[in-house]
Amino acid sequence: VSKQSWREFEVVVADDASTDATPDIVLGFAKRDSRIRLLPCPQHFGRPAGPRNFGMRQATGDYIAFLDSDDIWKSEKLAHDAAFLTADPVDFLFSGCEYFVNSLDNIVAVLDPAPMSNMILFRNLVMIQTVCVSRRLVLERQLFFDEDPQLRGIEDYHYVLEAYLSNVRMARRPGSDVLYRKYSATSIYPRRNLPLLLYRHAWNLRRIREKYPLSPARYYSFLALTMSYKTAQAMLGRA
Image (cartoon, rainbow, N blue to C red; front, side, top):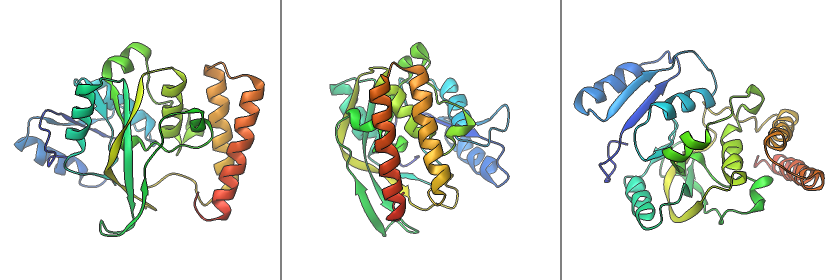
């Protein structure tokens, strides 16, 4: 992040009771760069949603972007976001990403998401590491991550769904400036456990239906499509 060509940013590191050298490393950077802040979470969440919400509440910039500890931004990521948002200040911006395995020279796939549509209800093609969301919108609409433990591993997808169904101004910008570590040892997505995977995606849509007016026909149609799609992915080893 410190190598970003766009220099007008802050870094909020929400430390969820890490047991490695994370605090010492971050404090070392913070001594050299006042834009970097280490914020220990007030409790141990054990899931991404809680630390993200804590960090979002501490942020002071106009937009909030997300980066997990095992993924990487290219040096132009924030500059490209800023240029797009200067020309078109949408509330929710996303872009493409590149998947790598083990090393950065082993790119195995490139995700170039389509413009937002109802397809998001059964398949997520928006990586949270590519997102910039307006802090004003987050605070006004309380658009935080759902901390329901049953959404563990798919809270990112649920967040994108909430933004879409809240009718916020969303836009896709061209290009990919995020390097996503596929099959990370720290990943909590249950791709190898099909029953749990299907249960969590079904619960995801159920939670969405509790919050937003999906008709029974629309809800069950997307539920069937989601279950079929995730089962096919799992059978092909792509979940």
